Amino acid sequence: MTHEVVAVVFDGFELLDLAGPSQVFSTAARLLGGAEPAYRVRLAAVRPGRVRAADGIAVHAEIGLCASADTLLVVGGIVLASALDPALVDGVRKLTQACDRVASVCSGAYVLAEAGLLDGRAATTHWAAAEDLARRYPAVEVHPDRIHVRDGPLWTSAGVSAGTDLALAMVAADHGADLAREVARWLVVYLHRPGGQSQFSAPLAGTPGRGDTFAELRAWIEEHPGADLSLAALADRAGTSVRHFSRRFAGEVGESPGRYVERVRMDAARRLLETTDHTLDHVARLTGLGAPETLYRVFHRNLGVSPGSYRRRFASAATISGE
Image (tube, rainbow, N blue to C red):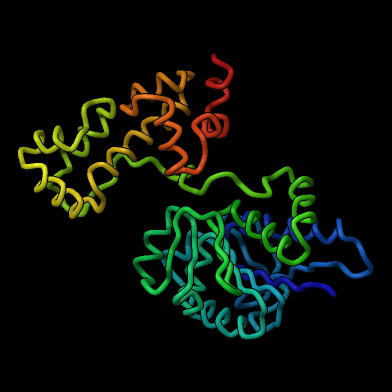
């Protein structure tokens, strides 16, 4: 039987949030063959008709938010973080009552959260929106580094291209890993993307704390990652005892001095890997991590990938070629 996928769109949606999953489902249907397609994707909107994506490309929503579906997929768009259409939220809430599986791509999680569908459940969204989503919807257990999260019938994914990862996971759940692997091969994408979305997020530099007491010290740390940044050295620079410094820093910045320093050094290493052809040993020494082994552990602990893998993925062509 055909698995009906209803994708919910709205003015300002991200086209790739729709195109990625749709391509996965159509490729799976083509590979499976058969008299009836294994998947069929239909577009729904508050008002059927022409809907324009954020990049200006228009699509046609053939149905309103009143159909039944096997899978309901709410795509994302930057507009959702600032303004949620009550009719969209209410329509999605009602539509889920006739769906077996409910999912969101990127900031589409805002719609599910506003509808109360993610209360008490684990979820994810684009790394840039994760903190805001968690703050606005405290009943949702937000996992900011996950590419996609499944919690019962609720599926959520990280930003934009992560919708492809989400759809591949759904195909694997529906028809097995072999088909999902073949779809990934046809689309020339990862079946299981290495690492989490932290590797794609913005660097730490310039991130404000909850107070201003350590703003100058944090700026100095970020400018001198290779310096002595031990707890004792930082407390001395702040003119306070180690115990008092550690407690106040954690309270204002939101994490311990040691954790903050590690992230600063990791981000400095990321920039060097992206923009230079320095050896891993040199990168480790310049950023205060000391040795390649420490660099490797820090990258795996925070990003889920090795420094070498990170460089291959994000370094400029000139850096890779040694120009």
